[in-house]
Length: 76
Image 1 (cartoon, helix red, strand yellow):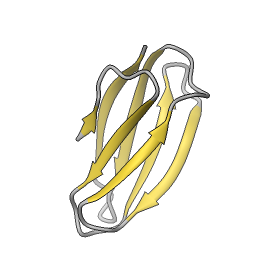
Image 2: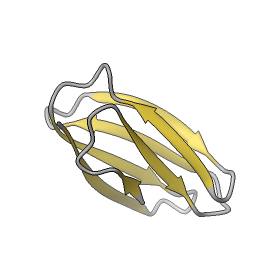
Image 3: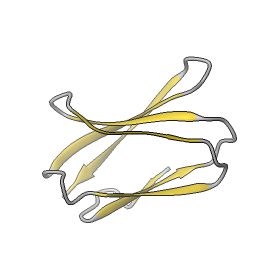
């Protein structure tokens, strides 16, 4: 879960899983903007957007079994 969406200053990513997940934030041009791991259940990850230009971004989550999930957010 990601909120707020659209966002201006930051987004909050809720990591509700117990397993270690690799996250990447990717711009519409394919540039990796951020790359991190989370493995704490119910962790709230606050991602500042001050270095992001307005537009659409993809958050890609890669699980240890190879499964990939993604979600789009908008930076105003």
